[in-house]
Image 1 (cartoon, rainbow, N blue to C red):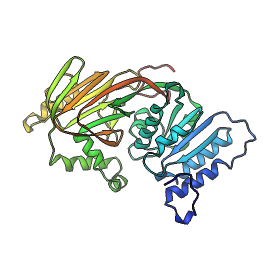
Image 2: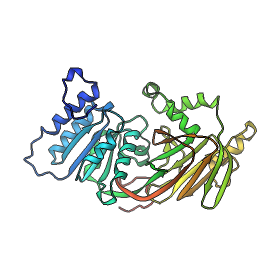
Image 3: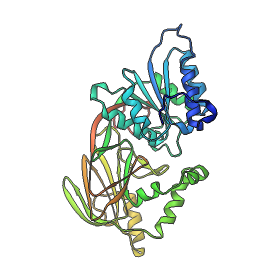
Image 4: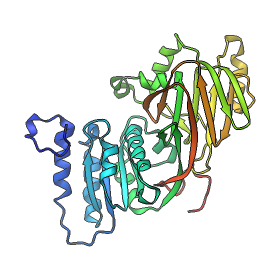
Length: 335
């Protein structure tokens, strides 16, 4: 469906109707005051009726910021919108981790010098990246942070030719996210991932293959492999507690098959997070390759994919992002 085609409102799906409302609001504010920043806000159509965000945008316009809002209608819109924004001081992704992932793909399509600063207004279910960075959940506070604070360069994770900002999970971890229904997430919130995880664990499939790092190669099986640029995934579970988004490294957590007799050993390894664990291993590395013996489902910031083999790498300081001054995911303390 063409995003810019004007149709009678009674014939529209709700997100598209909200899109017309946002476009109208974009043109309704007086230009009498000098605009201090040129801002493009890409809003997930599923949450286009968020009254708190609408009010926050109005207040920021009244303070002199020129904010243009575009509302997504279908998958791929956010990435396309990034390619169409032209010159901008700031690009804001308003939605969940999936919206943010699409926007990051759009940014990485641009040349390095053409990428605008990225801000985040978390409006999704899990909001793993935003939560890890301590970005406020309140739309007014998050938007104020975006337009008033300074940006810092951070890393972006690459999985073959695809991108992730927060984390990639392979095997069982990917199946949990990919098979958790939207209705279940709405009903239970982040707890939905735990529920679905318990269900899938009954019929857990073991993936055989090789994991290659700069200084070692591991051959075996494991239901969970998580590659973190950020620290948490699956609705708030910290899986890479030592990760930073500006250190040029990925944090790799691999959980191999754990027999019932080894649960205590595995629990100790989970606390220690050593690279030499028998069942649970943890590494910090600029890259890692995974070569399974079959196609493995992979989840990139909540977006499903499949790879027969994949090379993950950290692209150092690829984009500039606005995060709070006390962001726990920064390796540097000064701003």
